[in-house]
Length: 172
Image (cartoon, rainbow, N blue to C red; front, side):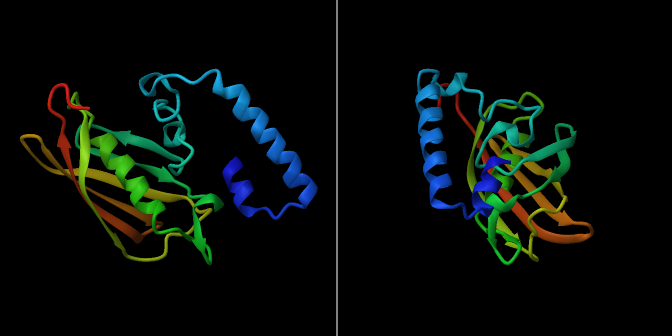
């Protein structure tokens, strides 16, 4: 992934200048193709890891029904905190996306995160295949309580507990 290469590199000044010029060119070329939020590709491509968002870790859902999701994730160098461990802020980002996605399955209306609590159980390593699971704990009216876990083999790295609230009709 491009962002992993950027995070891992210490390029010489001439390459930094060249890449800076290329980035400016890409920005200029893409600017004329900007669309409204609801028409953009990023975050909407369900079949791509991380739904094609650059910030979210690339994850793949392998099992999904209206109560549970499971799959794998691999945090790259872009998500490095230090010493081979995933940055603590990247883990809630993953859980927010995963639990929020599950909160929509089964024809449920869109919701917003009202609460997300993360328990860090052990180091979450970068550049390793990790397993995740997310599940509904309960649903009460507009409130959806979900949980999740990330594991490295059998070791639990992090657990999540979240509350998502369904939007009212017309609510953004």
